[in-house]
Amino acid sequence: MGPYGAGRERRLALSDISVFSEVREAIVGTGGDPIQICMECGTCTATCPWGRLAEPSPFNIRAMMHMGRLGYEGFETEDVLYACTTCSHCAARCPRQVRIVDVVRAMRNVIGETGSIPKTLRAPVGSIKANGNPWGQERADRCLWMKDLEVPAFTPDTEYFLYVCCTSAYDGRSQAIARSVVRLLQRAGVSFGVIGVEEQCCGESLRKIGAEEDFINLAQANVALFQKKGVRKIVTTSPHTLYTLKKEYPELGGQFEVIHYTELLARLIGEGKLSFHAVPETTVIYHDPCYLGRHNGIYEQPRQLLAAVPGVNLIDFEPTAQDSLCCGGGGARIWMETKPGMRFADQKVQQAAEKGAGILATACPYCIVMLEDSARNLGYAETMPVKDISEILVQALD
Image (tube, rainbow, N blue to C red; front, side, top):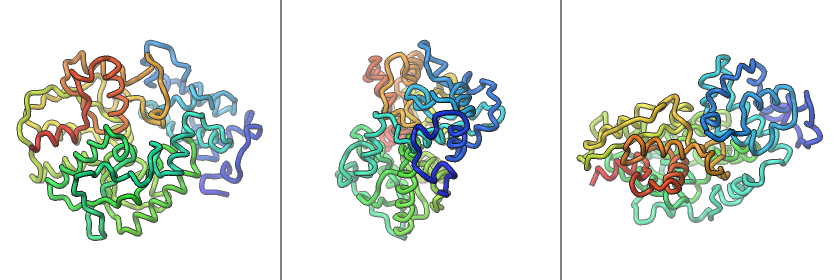
């Protein structure tokens, strides 16, 4: 029996799990045992962001849980199981404290075992396996984000390994995040370094998609690499990487101290190692990334960073913090198309504009991608740019 229970003993076929107990047992066996304490009260559906849209969505978390508990077919479709962004809004409000995201992951594992992953998600899976990143780019190009920067190589004497996520390493727009974080760490005198082209994806997308075996293999390879290099502390540019390394790698032998860059920078400001000059008066609205906030409880540090820049007038969304609306990019949704009228990010951008924001700030590369796309589509890209906190801070260094 494999590490994730009975569902991993052999490769499943759709005919094996077509009805009733076989489906339920497969879900429980791949890590979805919390489904058994769900009382189907509907609180999850009432809090789900899909319910905030004007246009009705076929996704209903309560119905999906019901189908999974009873072993009915139908939960596995792209517009049901793969509609979930794993934002954890439902789990945060669940009166039984059901770990709903774990259930969703387990249900996707079952689909992955059958080889029935949606076609749109097979490309990032294949790219990670072939190139070490989901962006379809060459492994050798992982360090292009460092062009013209003097980024130190990690050695056993280095305090922090800066783990730049695939989005910040390969996506042209998001490379500015990695570059900004480097400049901020250098200004504060932090001992840090990168491993370089040997780095590869943390595997976050693999696990969210349901390619569990591929995730385990990749994670174990990363753990072995990090241990070989002497890594003890890791600072990440992505909340999704933070979650994966901090909460999922330990079960695979990855015992590291992992923090997000906003945590480290907030501490450096408190120690007097980093300060900023005044910028032109600007109203900045901050969007809480799900994987920084609800999944990791980091709400204050990003706001502390923005408040440390003279000239920044910081405002919040309504609702915000624990109740913040997801951007729509989590749970592998960033690799899927969402039709107009069904995009969570559109609502965030529209509200930010109505509140008079001059900049829409966040601290997650996925959120940057989703929010910028909506800002362009809604005509706010020029008047209300979307920026990572690190980019705002760097502008206050010069």
